[in-house]
Length: 226
Picture 1: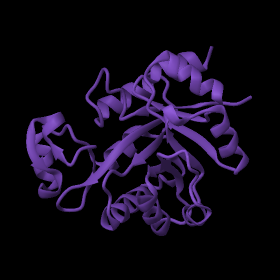
Picture 2 (picture 1 turned 90 degrees about the vertical axis):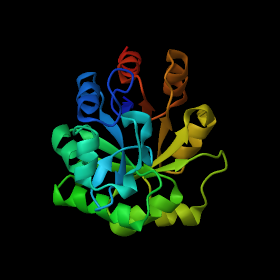
Picture 3 (picture 1 turned 120 degrees about the vertical axis):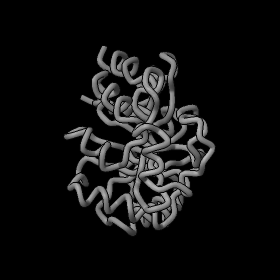
């Protein structure tokens, strides 16, 4: 029987501020199989959970993360922005999907090193576009990768051979039965992001999607399990 993986996008952002430990805990309590988090580096090279390049949207501080030390981030957010190490420890045995927006080589190496230092390789997968996933593959030959792809044209074979993804990760409007069949025929699993309506989720489930990333993980698990 096919089991669809329920991935909580940035935790449980409709109830709790995204990319925080309370959001992560809430998503797991709602039945998420995996929690997706975004990771960037502070000025002093500490991987922390933040999607944007600045603290403005979530924390009302118009300061670039790259200009702040981990201690400064902690002070400005009253400890609200967790480190990746905090998140991995909080998740315990649960799995994390680490998205790497705007990552460079230094970011990838720091993130992979943190995962390895905590012995968390078996419960982490990485997702982003081709350039970033090539960096992840270079840093960790055994990493589980979800290659984000935004075109109906399939990835080139040379790229797939270099990245060696387990998953192909598509925007949900692109997913059809035909796409799912092609992805599976080529030997990959299909993931999709980020549907939040019952109708969209049902369509993805019916199409044969293997993993769905959503802001409403409770709705997804209810639909999946009926």
